[in-house]
Length: 384
Image (cartoon, rainbow, N blue to C red; front, top):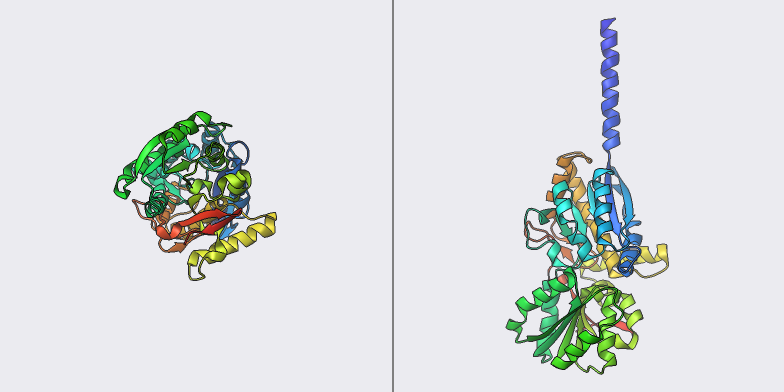
């Protein structure tokens, strides 16, 4: 009788263990996108792409919890805290803006939860330290793009450069990157202006830049706000070359800017000119597949910002099976293993380049991740 009871108890225990393993056989991923508010031009394609991410990785089911921060950094922090403490996610993809991602660094570090940020600013992953080691970035580092632009400036005789950027982490980081780089290229920065993303005019800043008479102007702003200062320069007759960062590399930049953005030079993604990219580039196949799937689902071509979220899914597909060899999802051990797996990804093609992560570099792109682009007759063209 005692043996029979013991057998029942053991079977019940084993059944409970089986159910526990089954319950843990899923990965929980949180996503945060600015699908409303001033950053929505970036956030909408990111939210749409998040809905396309794989729901299976190997034998694991992937559960996504999608949140909108309405373009407000305070909401970003609230959303991330909810995902970490209530949903107990294994990783977070997002947010859409650099200031929003900067606001999460301490929270992510304390929670020891990997964040894959589809944002522009290198400040989220550099300088690498114990806080930033939990953050990864699926966009080209600013310095990589800056070197492409500075090479073009030097080749075209630019000696003086005016700068105007957003009055946040994105603009400030870009000014710092330029300040550290321009001298070896024989270029002098002659102005440093700022504007807020919601501003509708930058007349004062534009007049100061015009007064400095630079050979060229670089605008550092993500999404729609990148158009406004360029329009102001053109309206006041500026004749020099206008450069933009990869933050402006989206079709809405052309739609919103019209003739004012013709002949702009910027560093961007091969996603904007896939037909002009060699089939030998392994990223082309990934980009074309994503773009075709997005268009079939939503009826439009995705912005490159959506590709950054798609790449987050590509990274997780590679890293999750490796982390699973160490621990089960839903545990601190799994999150640690996932971070280490992400940090050691090698030769992985994404939509815009090849990822080679290291403990020092949590972006992983090299020069293959940046195309020098311009706009001719309302269409993107690769600068040869």
